[in-house]
Length: 251
Image (cartoon, rainbow, N blue to C red; front, top):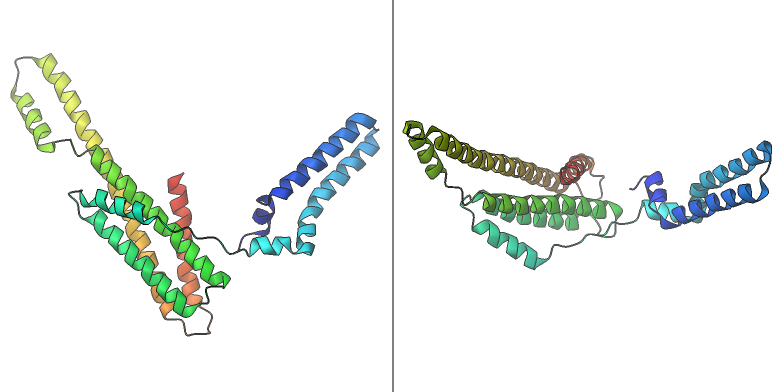
C-alpha cells in the first residue's frame, strides 16, 4: 500500500491544483493590494484549499484508488536475458552465470508458489510479485555491472605485471625509467584490485537477494490455504528492505 501523502504528491492534478491556487492568490494580492488583515485571510484560504485537497480525494475515492493500486510488473526482455547469459558465459569465473541461472529458477519458484497460495487479483499477490521483481531486476543489473567490470580488467596480465616489477627491483641501470614503469605497473594492479572489489560487492548483494527469495518462497509454501501469511509477510518485509537497499545502491 502506498502512503496517503505519497499517493497525493504523485497524483498530477495535485500539482495542477496547487499551481492554480497559488497563481490565483498571487493575482488577487497583486491586483487588489489588500490591507494586512485581508492578505492574511487570502493566504489562509489558499493554505486551507491545499490542506483540503487530500480530503477531497478521500471523499471521491481517488485517494484509496491510488493507495491500493496494483503495481504493474514489467517482464524482462528474453533477448536481454540471453545477451546477459552470453556475456557471463565468456567470463573465467563461473559464479556470475550460476547466479543468473539461480535467479531465474528462484523467481520462477516464487511465482509458482504465489499462484497456489494467493489469488492473482489480490493486492498482496501483486505486492509480492512486484517486490520480488524489483529485487530480481536489481540483481540482473548487478550482473551486467559484473560483466562490464570483468571485461575492463580482462586485458591486465597479472603475471606479466608481477614479473616486470620483480625485474625492475633487480635492475639498477636506469633508476628514473624504472621508477616511472614501476608506477604505471602498480597503477594497473590498483585498477584491477578496485574492479575486483566492486565485483565481489555486487556478487555478495546478489547472494543476499537469492537467500531472500528463498526465504519468501518457503514462507509462502508453509502458509495454510485461507490463512493470513504472517511468516510470509515478515519474509516479504525483508525482501522489500532488500529492494530499497538495491535502489539506494543504484543511486
